[in-house]
Image (cartoon, one colour):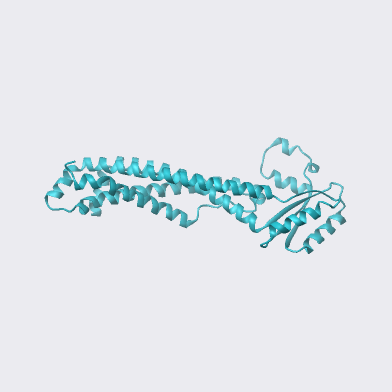
Length: 290
């Protein structure tokens, strides 16, 4: 049977390549959406398990006062790290590799010094809020940022990404069914003589249909594989641009789709391709006269 499949693919190579390309385009959209959702979820998970706060200090604060506040924070329950960031360090972290002339022209004093507080336990969110309310009363503290609003925004983005992925999943399903089904019907029309000869010599419907189903599975699986590969290449190209300062700010580095996701996408493409070919040719093969 595989010999018949390879022979049929070679005979209609352009038709099959066009089908694979169309399937790949559909899966690229789905894979890209899943990649964004996976990274948003990684940031959300990181921030949910680790409470963070930035304690912005008065520009005139004395080093001894900074040391005292830092030691008091380290002694607080749940605090695992307190890192002092000077104005110059803050400027360097924000600037990173950017070429923005407006930012480069700003003096170090434009970037406030801060204490970056980290809590890591189950009650991080509640404890960071209590610490923030206490710190705001200190005269040496100008403001406290707990990033709670950012967490809520990330949750909304994740929900939106999940909904978009579900919509695209339906679009991909319809695209694969349409493309593979049409391709198989065209292939059957071109190989009608071969099919009629096989039926004359007593070939069963499953024997006749088998190569078409395998071809459909190959088209769906290969299209999904090419889509995942393309997204992977693009991810490697742009990954460095999102590392560095942005990774430091978010607390995590960009990550690609898990291997299980990639395998599932390819398997999904192959399964839908096979089912589409089977369904589209069932009536034509079992009832050739219609």
